[in-house]
Image (cartoon, rainbow, N blue to C red; front, side, top):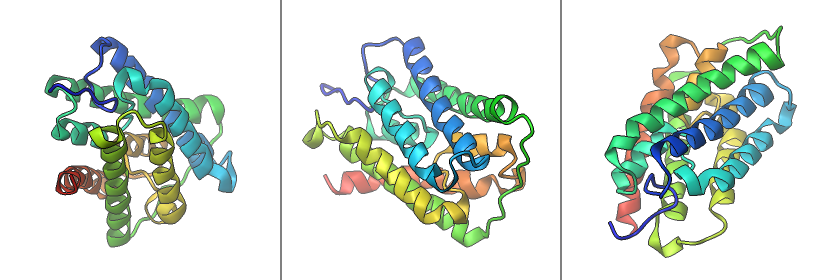
Amino acid sequence: MGVRFWAGCMSEHTLQHKLIAEFIGTFFLALTICTAAVHGSAGDYAPFAIAATLMVMIYGLGHVSGAHFNPAVTVAIWLRGACEKDEVAPYIAAQVIAGAAAALVSANVLFTEADVSALEMELVPAVGAEFLYTFALVFVILNVATSEATAGNGYYGAAIAFVVLAGALTVGGISGGSFNPAVTGALFTSGVIEAADLWMHLVPQFVAGVLAVYAFRATQ
């Protein structure tokens, strides 16, 4: 390609290094969500805890794996041309496993007597919320982390984290504010989302990620 993007999979690190980085970053993001929001340890401050965790993990691990921590982001960055095709499936597997593991740790280590009730979502608002803010998240990532015009900026982690913060504060009560299939998996493992409702997160998240790529290309 000639140009290397920090948000892509194209770094000098081995695939093993990248997958470990993706696992760690996704694990702590999902752990914070499950602990601060699902089990309520942070109360009304949960969105800030989540955004802070995401931001520091992006800054800490972005140079290794691109710090996707989100299957929809990985697919979008691959479509963008900043990630090798043969690394997409391993990235997604590491992210999904990390999300589920984080949910189990939160429920069985940090909250051994947790009582979690399933989230009641209305179809149109939930799908709309997950679509719109996943689109915003991926679109921002593509612009601040894969664009030559913004290469070398130091604000990428904050920009990405603030999208998640804005989404969590705005529509968290509508859909749970996942914007991330790996987080959706963590919420399912926690018992917050029922199996029959998984599609209300997963479909709009992946569709939004793909459409964000086209929107990104249209603005370049």
